[in-house]
Amino acid sequence: MRIRLSIIIIGCLSIGFYWASCSFGSKTEQGEFLYNKYCENCHMANGEGLAELYPPLNNSDYLVLNRNELACQIRHGLKGPIIVNDIEYDMAMPSNQNLTEVEINNILNYIYTAWNNNLPASNVEEVKQQLSTCPKRYE
Amino acid sequence: MVQLMVNRILIFFLILGWFSCSQPQTPGKLPVIGEREIVNGDTLYHTIPDFEFVDQDSLTITKETFKDKIYVADFFFISCPTICPKVKAQMKRVYDQYENDDRIMFLSHTVDVKYDTVPALKRYAEKLGIDHKKWKFVTGNKEDIYGIADDYFSVAMEDKNAPGGFDHSGRLLLIDKKFRIRSFCNGTESDEVDGFIKDISTLLDEN
Image 1 (cartoon, rainbow over the protein chains, first blue to last red):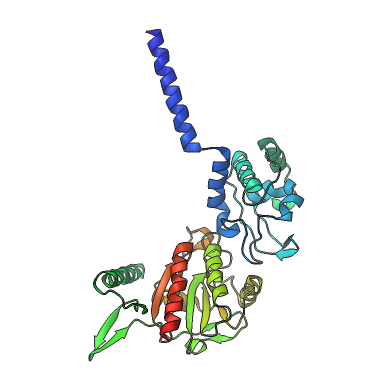
Image 2: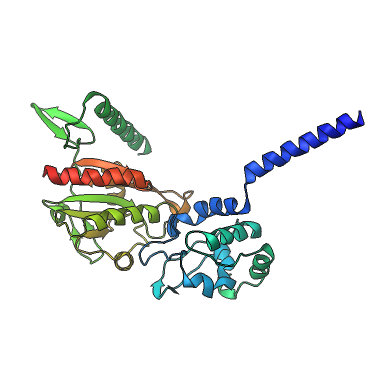
């Protein structure tokens, strides 16, 4: 009886695990999914942005130079001009207050390795730390 | 108003369906899209009515601006957080193909007349890097723009629940020299835009 019960429990657990891994996918997959939902409209599927309106995320010096503020920018949005690869961009970026730290981390990790990018991976601790100390201008 | 628009869109698709089923189009000729009526033996096609808007250089834009040209039209707003940037990227792709072709122009109507002022449109056009003589970004009376959207079989209306506050379609429309709609596509779908570009070539050959 006990053995049968444990077989059932193990069975259910493995089905649950299988289901979970299919539904949620890997972290990068979630990052890509969220990127397509929240970022791709402006930054485009190839990360190239559009002309001098929406800045590129692919081969972007801005990502390297402002890494410690990117999570704050995704959550709180961005206003005012910025320089990316020597070009000035000045369209407002909307905030995404509904995204969790884990989701923001997954988006960042997707961007860091998508297209030609090969930037060091981000982790949730780094994102949490950053979000708890966003500069005042993002509030 | 909404009912009227829904009706029009339905009729539009019915006619479109009729076209695709019963009347195989002549190779090398695009269909005329929209309602039509036969008066004294002549077929009257749906045409874009007269309009008067202001462009990014404060110039008055009317049908006269597009005299003897074909043009591509769309509806957008600058602060749009959803489909507009993608549609603009596709429209820019179309523009790039015909940048040096004087037979074609481009017309983008803002649906956000409050914020997309002439200077805002000018800055947007400059940042997009286009020829201001060839691609007009226009604003005007809200009612005029929302009204003409209907004639372009596009949706443009204020909607507090829509992201950014406006509801509008991401269609690109191809207008011929007689101000008749000859082709359209969903401006968010790159594949559809490829077909649309082919239609532009077909229409240019027709003229």
